[in-house]
Amino acid sequence: MADNAVRKYSEYDHHAPDISLENVHESWDTLRAQCPIGRSDAYGGMWVVTGYAEAHEIFHDPEAFSSTPLIIPPFPQAMKMVPVEIDPPDHFKYRTLVATPFSPRHAEKMVEPLRVIVNRLIDDFIEDGQCDIYQTVATPYPTLMGTIMLGLPDSDAKLFEDWTHKIIHMSATDFEVAGEAVIELYSYFYALLEDRRAKPCGDMMSLLAEAELEGEKLTDEELMGFCLLLLIASIDTSQKAIGSMLWQLATQPEVRTRLAADPKLIPPAVEEFLRLWAPVQPARRATRDVEVGGIPMKEGDQLLVLLGAANRDDREFPGAAQTVLDRSPNRHLTFGTHIHRCLGSHIARLEMQVLLEELLRRLPDFELQDGAEIEWSKGQVQGVVKVPIRFTPGTREGA
Amino acid sequence: MKVLIDGERCQGHGRCWSLEKQLFEPKDDLGHSAVIGGEDQSDDAVLLAAAMRAAEACPERAITVFTD
Image (cartoon, rainbow over all chains, first blue to last red; front, side):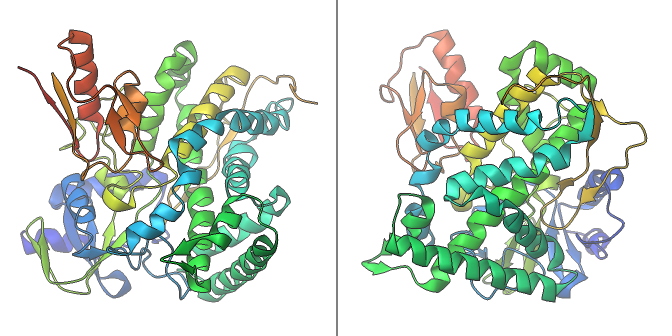
């Protein structure tokens, strides 16, 4: 690969303050047009991957590309997130421990509870004719779903959101604040797991408290690793994906109209929104000298794999920048690929489908308010985080 | 036709069994897929189209469809 092309990435920083929705996708396209893997000087130096085939190849070689650390620069937690930051050969036995609560069967059972949650959230603002739907829906919906899945009290939702935000979005800028959040999160789960050991009740926390690997109970480190990942993976990621999807719907009435007229399009449309708005941009670390896409990498090299960019690679997705609601094939990388494929993917898809069904039913004419400023969350969990809308007021359906 | 799932490649994304419920189903909690009724399927054109759509949708390229 021509060295000058690779060096076009030299100033790339996923936390750069000037990243916005107006420039983020275009900047990826510009970089990818140079070469699908480039070299940034940020954070001690990292390879930045914008190509689909290259991202796919890297993910498919967990021996050469460890998923520890997943984050650049790393979160202030000493323990690995489990199972995402565990490599083979141990990875699979950790993943299997939590398979059942995330199974397709269990996900299906969540559909009606999710519908109830969405309608309750909509009831809270439906009479007002306007709101920031990122605040009223995108933020609480995944949090409430997460509390159900994990068996946590929804009265603690604000705590989880606060810690999640600090850990994911402030580790790069205010390490101490993020570090305190990690400690608070660990204390909370430590106490909760003690409680479940004494009084198991069949929920996810009880499952973890009682889980055994090769005859041994999980260590504190392993348990905290699970808890941290379960919390942040279910909340922050979905909030951003949903925020971005809602922004698109609020600004593209033709898409809203088409979906309202043909609800069978909702599942493939959700796939297309997932492709366009992939929130998670994970990292990898080379465990040995290895070559990818013509680039020789050294043992220890960091890689930032921009799944959002890979999902917009024309080589895999013709007309990648266009929204094609029934796009096929649509083998996007939003939930990852290979052994770390997101366990929450089944439930996340249903979460988004149910949301669209109910939103289009209850406030079909919602649109972005005039002069609304777009706010884009950058870093390794990206998305639109402010969506001020107006709509014809409706009536509450619940008590 | 024959519809084969490479069990080593399948990672339980579930695109196949979400899209083509008449042909695929999850076989375990991790979402790994199985062809309903086994790998030997009729040569029906509608079924073939469904199998091709599912093969095309798999991010792991785990599905292969063989026709005579």
